[in-house]
Image 1 (tube, rainbow, N blue to C red):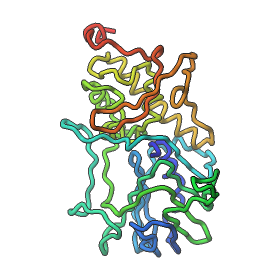
Image 2: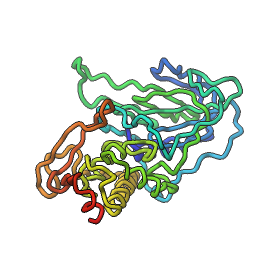
Image 3: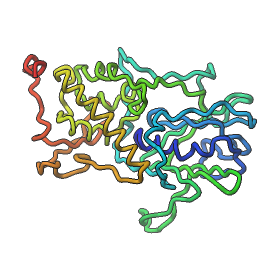
Image 4: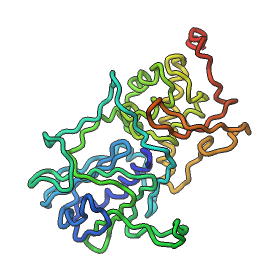
Amino acid sequence: MPEGPSVRKFHHLVSPFVGQQVVKTGGSSKKLPPATLQSLWFQDAQVHGKKLFLQFDPDEEMALPGSNPLAELVGEGKLEKEAMGPEPTLGPSTQEPSAGSQCVELVSGDSSGQRGHSPAAGAQRWLEIRFGLFGSIWVNNFSRAKKANKRGDWSDPVPRLVLYFGGGDFLAFYNCQMSWSPPPMVEPTCDILSEKFHRGQALEALGQAQPVCYTLLDQRYFSGLGNIIKNEALYRARIHPLSLGSLLSSSHLETLVDQVVKFSTDWLQGKFQGKGWHKQIYQKEQCPAGHQVMKEALGPTGGFQRLTWWCPECQPRLPQEEPQKLQNS
């Protein structure tokens, strides 16, 4: 699924439509019929980690739109009309909650906590959007087939939802799951692209006695971090993915958090500048130093296994039997 930087750009693509009324709808969604959005006013857009939330109301009167915490990165850069985030994955990037979690996603509003096809009468209409592997949003255009499908034809992708606004403008949402939800209330201290990202909290989580590549994908501590960021940050920090966090020095952990934030921010900034992102290890056969790269599906026993690339030369595995030496390194 698209990672934090991609969803941040999706947010920026839809934000100019805040304050407009949906005049017509379309799309293939069956679970959430597009017609339920007919004539609603698009009131607000928020992004939290890998999820996009859109607020709709039957009345024109609006609440203040949510702010973009990375507005300073956007500047006056020209946006592309299409934002696609094809990020290969073997499964969801979240991990099952465990005891002692520090950062919990909170949701308020409907006391029942239920989500479904349509909002209750008079309730705030927040649409939660979770993008799939090739999830994307197109503005005033539709996605076109780039190659033949398995049946050999060139059928264009079918959008899950299309929202038409006045003047003929429209948004097309592809490969995503949608449901009505209570108003989103998520702690920004978990979000790797938030100004309020809590480094101390992240460092404490990484210091657990488990492989750091598992912890990095835990959305309770690193919301918005996916498999690409995981691989690139570990390589840049020169840390083996299976290194136990409890055996790494504080300087190693600090460097890893630095690389997570830097790579994520650079990736997002590149999107707004129309530049491709530079990967050093992800899906590579050789690292920048020319060493052979290893690839293996790694994950907790009974949990999600994610393809992981690393260089055994640049990211040597530290011996677990020498914790004292490692702590003093």
